[in-house]
Amino acid sequence: MRTECERCGAALAADGGAAICSFECTFCPDCAVAMEHICPNCGGELVPRPRRVT
Image (cartoon, rainbow, N blue to C red; front, top):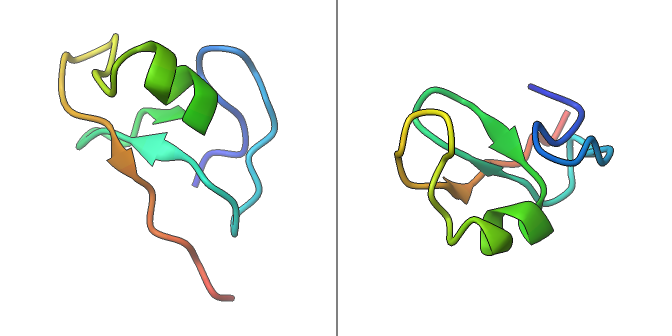
């Protein structure tokens, strides 16, 4: 699980919000909105990253 946004470098907590594509490119919620939930690397949809409980 990545710990920072690939676009802006913001820290991403394991139990915090983030968006990922099917290739697990990872972005903070603000960048995901700015990119209209489209991954700039593969063109895929960005969806909420599942949260880990442990």
